[in-house]
Length: 107
Image (cartoon, rainbow, N blue to C red; front, top):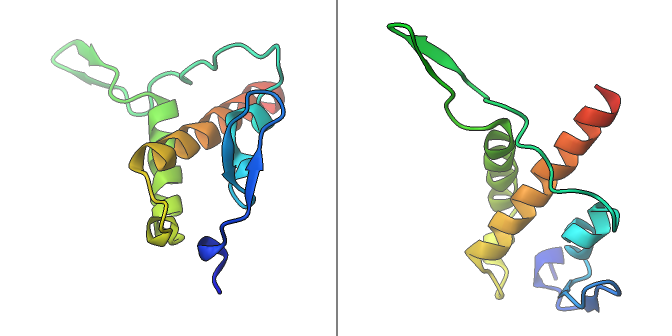
């Protein structure tokens, strides 16, 4: 039986969110201290200037979430019988926010 097929459920003691045991460590409450503020977007990922006009492009947060989502989907999470695109998107942004917090803390 693959890890993705497991149906062990856990509930967050802070907010009541329920998820599989494998994904619960990626839940926002598990990664965010109770007093943490909304993470910054990290600034532009690929800013460009064309004819003197500055275009910021996507934020670094969106870029990191994009790569995290790519990895999550490649890991087989979409084969889970309980697959929900919104859940995968949430997990991708949870990873991006965690990376930006570590980046701000440790430079």
